Image (cartoon, rainbow, N blue to C red; front, side, top):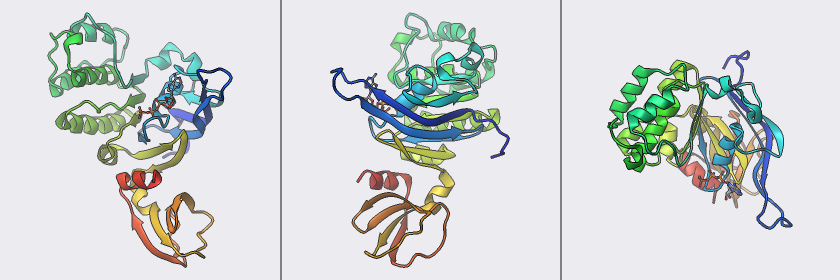
Length: 289
Ligand SMILES: Nc1ncnc2c1ncn2[C@@H]1O[C@H](COP(=O)(O)OP(=O)(O)OP(=O)(O)O)[C@@H](O)[C@H]1O
C-alpha cells in the first residue's frame, strides 16, 4: 500500500450507543472505540456474530446512523454531510434491499441509471445475463435472491469508489454466489475501489477478501491481511509459567489454550507446548468460545 494513497473510508475511535427503550436505563454500546482504514483496492470481509455491530458500522459510514464520539471519513467527507458527488461514488446494498415496487426490472434500472453519470451499461448487461434476470419481470415478483442480484447490479454498475455490502450473497445460490464474489474482487482491483462486505460464509471471505475485520460485541478484535492470518494468528498451548512476547496480542484464552496474534514475530517462545494455525471458521469459533 503506497503511503501517499488517500483512505477511501476511515473510522477513528468510533463509539455508538443506541438509547434504551426505557430512557432512564443505560444505552446499548454497539460500537466501541472502533478504528479501521480502507484504502483503494482493499476488499475487507467483515465477520462477527449476529448483533456484533456490522450493519451499524456501515450505516454510520453512510450517515444513516449518527455516532456518539470519534470520527468517520467517507471519501474525504463527514458522513452526516455527504455531498452529491460523494454519494454518486458510493454503492450500498443493505441486508434487505427495497424499493422500485411497481416497476419492471428494466424500468427500475432505467430510472436508477439516470442518477449515475458513470453508469457502465456493458457491465449492467453482463451482470443481468450472469444472474439470469428477466428484465420484463415486475420487481415485486422477484424472488429474494433475484432481488438481491438486482440490488447488487444497481449498487455496482457505476463502479463506485466505495462499496458497502451488508451480507450481499446470503440469498444467492452457490453458483451465483461464487461468480459474484469473483467479480467483486476483480471490480475492486480494476476500479481501485474499496469494498467492505459482511458475510457469515467464512469460505467466501477467505476466497475473495484481501483483509478480514473481526468484530466482537462492537469491538474490532482483529484486522489483518487474509494472507497473513494463517501465519500470524495461532492457537498456542502454553505451560503455566510461559511469558509471551510483549508484542503478541492475546485474542482469547481458555485455560492453557491461548489464541494470539503474533504480529509477524517468529521467535521461539519457551513454554509453548503446541501451536496450531487456524482457518477463518476455526478462528471465529475459538474467539467466541
Ligand atoms: N435502531 C436501533 N435501535 C436500537 N438498537 C439497535 C438498532 N439497530 C440495531 N440495534 C442493536 O444493535 C446491535 C447491533 O446490530 P447490527 O444490526 O449492527 O448487528 P449485525 O452485526 O449487523 O448483526 P447481523 O449479523 O444479525 O446482521 C444489536 O444488538 C441490535 O439489536
